Length: 331
Image (cartoon, rainbow, N blue to C red; front, side, top):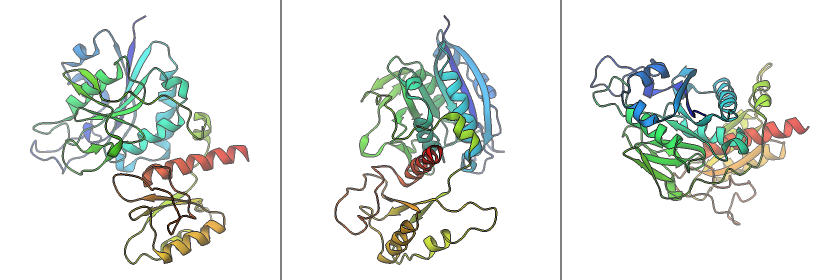
């Protein structure tokens, strides 16, 4: 049986264009379809080897505008292809701004059995396709090499030759080509000349804390979860404003993730407001705004606010939204 690599396009800088080849910031994202990106890669046939490409455009947006409808559509298509026995792996072209969120979302909603022996690889670019030296073509070839690697499994990301796990990947630079890190967890490996050199094995495709069915995602709206940040002089005004009675037709806030300073510490005024709304039934989760490391639980101030189990604020928000969705389905 001829195996297939599925390419799903979501837009982003990798599909962006600018008027000048020297302009790497003033471009329009999501201008080219994924089929156009692939047709401009003469080396793709060699990298695919004996795999046949399947191409589908799921969305065409700047990833800063990524939202619930695009995620639902993507999750549905990925789940569809994962279930096909002749599909070896998937490559998703995506913008860098929210790549880490999409990767984490997919890692929580896709069935674990579908990811046990197949990889879903997100890739991207920091420069548009019209750049004098675009990085998208190499990232795309690296993603193909990763998707067909024998030991690749789960939801992964590759950028600048570095392989990251969905849970750990984080964008940490607004401009340079190597814009992502896995923090102190470290990368899983590197793609070098079309081959993957693993530093760590891919994490097992274990069930996530909550599992939300793909069909349930498409049938429901977001549970509204907001992020607030701690800083010098922070007050509880933002929290109280967010949790005030919502105007008619608007969704009420169901949860708040606080990006604390240091070890998840929170200004006393902000903490008081968070404790107040928590008592009113709003779910509160405490993370750290530090790029590396995670909250170490203890008896420090703010310990009454559950911590994020090592997730960054944006990923803690996704986890909390999915937990709320799961509780709705049971209720």
